[in-house]
Length: 386
Ligand SMILES: Cc1cc2nc3c(=O)[nH]c(=O)nc-3n(C[C@H](O)[C@H](O)[C@H](O)COP(=O)(O)O)c2cc1C
Image (cartoon, rainbow, N blue to C red; front, side, top):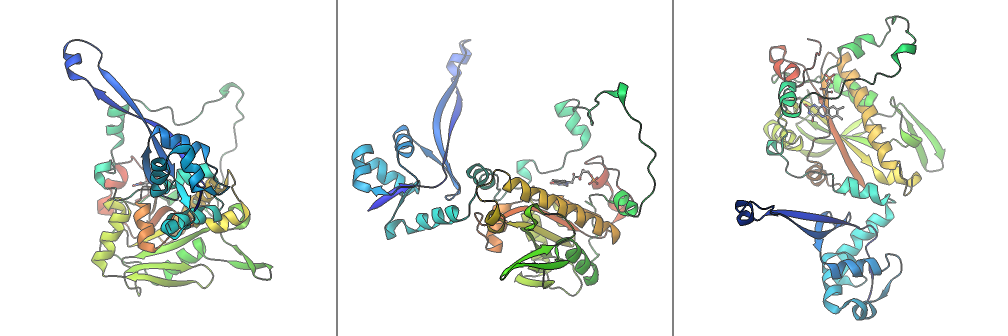
C-alpha cells in the first residue's frame, strides 16, 4: 500500500487556559496555559487535535509523492501512521481509504489557494442560533459595551481640501436614496411573480450570452464580475411568491427559469428561512430569500491557486446584492443582505459540496409593514425611508 499527505493542511497551536484556584486563594498567580496542536484540513471539514509525533510525521511526508506505507511506518511508527490514515490526514491508495482519497482529490481538482480553502471551510456555520449573539443589539447597547467607536470617516488634510460642487439630481437617485435594509416585512404580503422575475433577471440573469469558444460561453450581467466569469448564482427560497409553490429553487440565469430543488409548505419554508438565517427572524419574514452561491470550479478554471480568487467572488456577491437592493427599491420594497447564515447547513440542504460551491450570503426582500419600523431604526440606528 502507498500513502501520501493530504493536499492542504494547516497546523494551529492552540492553548487551553485553566485557573488553579488553591493558588489563587493563596494569593498567587495561577493562570495556566496548556498548548496543543490542531490540524485544519479543508477536505475533512473538521478540526482535528494531533500530538507531537503525528505533527512530525505530517511535516515529513510528501503531499505529492506516494511512498510505501512500510517505509513511513519504519520512520514514524506503525501506530502513528495508522492513526493519521484513520483521521484522513494521510491518504492511502487502497479501497479502505477511498472516501478520504476522494475528498482530497476533489480539493486538488478545484485549484483552491490553500489559505482561501482554509478560510472558507472553517468560516462556515452549522446550527447557529441567537445563542451565538445573533440578536441585533441597538447602537446604544454597543456604545455601553465598547465605548465610543472610531470616527465614521477618515479626516485627512482638511487644510488643503478641494470643495466639490453641489450634486445634481440624477436618474438613479430615487432608488439610491430610498434603498434601505428591511427588517419589518409585511407578513400578509406576497411578491407578484412579474416583480420576482424582473428582480432575478436583472440581478442574476444573463442579459447576453457571448460565445468565446466552440463550447465556451461568457455571460453579460448587470453587475461586474472578476474575470467575467460570473461564478455567483442564485438559489431562491420562495415563501410568499404569487404563482410559485413555497420551496427551494435554482434560478437558471440563461433560461430564466426557477428549477425546483425541494417544495414544501409555507410554514416549512418560513422555518427553513429562519434556520438558514441563523435565527434572524426579522430577515426570515421576507417573502423571498435568495442564497448567493459561488461556483468555485468556474472561478478557479481561470484563477488557479490564485491569492485573489476568493476575495473576487466575495466582491461579486456584494455587487449582486446592491443591484438586488436597488431593483427591490424600484419595486417599492426594502431588501436585505447577510453573511450571518448557516452556510454548511444550506449546502447540505441544496446538495452542494463546499469544495466546489461557496455559499456566500443571503439576500431577500418584500413589502414593508410601516407599523413595524422599530427593527429598522432602533436596532441599527438606520434612517431608511418610510
Ligand atoms: C455584508 C453585510 C452583512 C450584513 N449582515 C446583516 C445581518 O446579519 N443582519 C441584519 O439585520 N442586517 C445585516 N446587514 C445590513 C446592515 O446592517 C445595513 O446595511 C446597515 O445597518 C445600514 O443600513 P441600510 O442598509 O438601511 O443603509 C448587512 C449588510 C451587509 C452589507
